[in-house]
Every structure is written in structure tokens, then in C-alpha cells.
Length: 195
Image: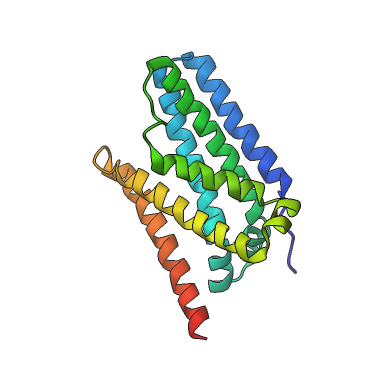
């Protein structure tokens, strides 16, 4: 008997937002509004965003490779995992702004690739709702979300890959998981084309 997994749809968004906001508040209350506090929050939100992104990124692949209760849950809640990732990355932007304000370091102006990532996140978030998605059209929606997913995959992989020199023991698993997720996704797509 298939038992429906609890914790669905908007509960995912609410809970992830609450967790990230709580971590933000605890770190800022404990350490104060200092540069190192915001840098810690940048690292935390980069990882929380990556986890939420990966769950959405592998949802359809996992369901096609090995259908299960967990893979069905991921697929049914992919939209809400994506929205949670967008909120997490909103907190990431707040943390970056905190460093910029405290240090006058411009982490945004000259970072075209990061800015483009935020443009994709914004457009994908807006078109995750029915009315904007209808206006955009199914074909254009698919193009936007496919390009956006692969661009964000590349952004996370490059961001974690650049830090391998700092701590290869910590960052190697992140890069390995990201690359594995892409390989599995591409293999499933290739099988689909071949059939």
C-alpha cells in the first residue's frame, strides 16, 4: 500500500523559508552584523540553495530511472523545491549585500555570471505560477526552464569547483554530486531520444 508522504507543496516552501530565516537570525544575533557573519551566511545559503536545486534537478531523472515513493514525491513537489531554492538564493543575495555594505566590496557589479543566474531564478520563479506561464506559452516556458536549470547547474558547479583549493575534502563531494546528477540526467534524456 502506497502511503502518501507528508510535507507537501507550500509546506516545503514555508518550512525551508522558516529554517533559513531562523539560521540567519541566530547567526546575526550570536555574532552581530559583521562581515564574517554575512560571509558565513553566504556559504550557508549557497549550500541550502544547492541542495534544493539538486532535488528539483534530479526529480524527473530519478522517477524515470527508479520509480519509488520518494521519486514520485520529488516529482510532484519539484515546483515547490524550485521556489524554495529561489527564496534561499534571495537570502543569499541579502548576505552578499551585507558584505557589500560593511566592506564597500562590490560583489555584484562586475559579476555578470552571478547576475545572469539571478535573472534566470527571477524569470523561472515568476513563470512557476499559472498566469505568467500561460502568457509565456508551453514551448517558451520549457526553453526558459531548461536553459535556467542547466545554467544554475553550471553556476553551482563552477562556484564549488573554484573552492576545491580551499578544502578539497569538503568541496569534492559537492562537485561530484553535481556532476553525477548531470550525467544521470543526460543519460536518461539520451535513452528517451533513442527509444
